[in-house]
Amino acid sequence: MIIQPRTRGFICLTAHPDGAHQSIKNQIEYVKSKGKIKNGPKKVLVIGASTGFGLSSRITAAFGSDAATVGVFFEKPASEGKMGTAGWYNTAAFEKEAHEAGLYAKSINGDAFSDEVKKETIELIKKDLGQVDLVVYSLASPRRTHPKTGVAYASVLKPIGQPFTNKTVDFHTGVVSDITINPVENDEDISNTVAVMGGEDWKFWIEDLKAAGVLAEGVQTVAYSYIGPELTFPIYRNGTIGQAKNDLEATVTVLNDLLKDLNGKSYVSVNKALVTQSSSAIPVVPLYISLLYKVMKAKGTHEGTIEQIQRLFAERLYTENGNVELDSAGRIRIDDWEMAEDVQAEVAKLWEQTSTENLSEISDIEGYRKEFFNLFGFQFDEIDYEKDANENVQVPSIE
Ligand code: NAD
Ligand code: NA
Image 1: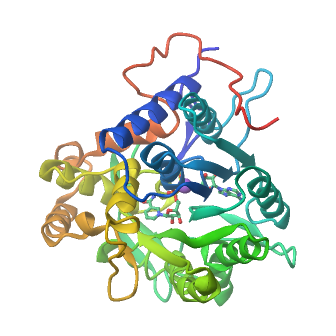
Image 2: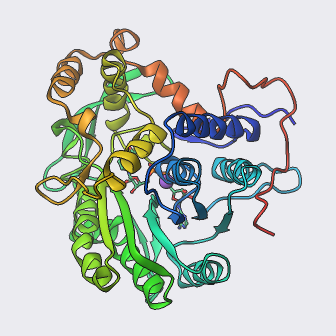
């Protein structure tokens, strides 16, 4: 079957298995080029392991530190005549590469918010690894069914207090326009978003893993957050999603208490704005990312998810003296290059000037688009998209 991209808004309905494999190979090559991470993790659980930051975390652990990895995600497998999702193909390719390199890699496909998937994961760790020494929490989801109450929560992306008007871009057409997003009408929008993207599920995971005795002495756990520039504050950091991130960040203290007797530590890492399936859904943010990419590429400081996570592991989580550098609020900052004053000043200046007419000149909208399609295995030079794709690709560890 010949597979071409088919998009609906910020969603791509198709995915290319061979392109996904190429993307995995590129990420592995990058991690290898940076050399082994000294004192890196050895047995790693990644929750949200199939795309974006979680996938790059799994690749960095495996190929940067020879770690055994268990990956948890929610993807659609390829079946008779039907395509799988990008994360499914990513994982199929990752496991193939990991197994060929002699690395343990097994995956669990299901709802990470559920008690069942937590149980299944614990059983797998007990059977194969005994314990894990790193737990990466990288879920991004629009909804969550609460495992104890059965209540289904849906998150919203809204400002709080007043309407927010700013520029946004349709990255397919390159049309820049003003968008007004109305604020939440009630506190429920906020609490629902916190229930989905806040820290409760991370806490549930760590509680269950600890109770089952599958966390190693000195275990570390890390979850990912975002801050970004003032111009996105109303929709991001001061909006509903920001409240969820505040809750996630506050969970660090709770988990540190929980992990104390294991000499374990929990962290939130504030990461850079990047093109992922989740971030392309947020209004205003894709235009900011297009300008940010332009500025950071010109300065030579641009990074993708794999560069971010390799640096997070090598220069933050696993330093030679064991010290983990934190900001005044206790967070790891791997968004330091994004937030550099000169970068932000240039982006802010470009932001004022941006219009449909000058977009391709002053922003890296081309790069945004390419990365978006890359997420689904498209637009890799190495792949001949006129040829039949390798259909029915399976994840070896899933029966
Ligand atoms: P992503 O959409 O690429 O990855 C989400 C992962 O979660 C996938 O592996 C998906 O399968 C999994 N998932 C979603 N729902 C699930 C469920 N119910 N059960 C099991 N797995 C499920 O997203 P991402 O951008 O890599 O985001 C990961 C984290 O990084 C989020 O906390 C996000 O806020 C944060 N972050 C993102 C950015 C950015 O710009 N993309 C920047 C900073 C921080
Ligand atoms: Na992820």
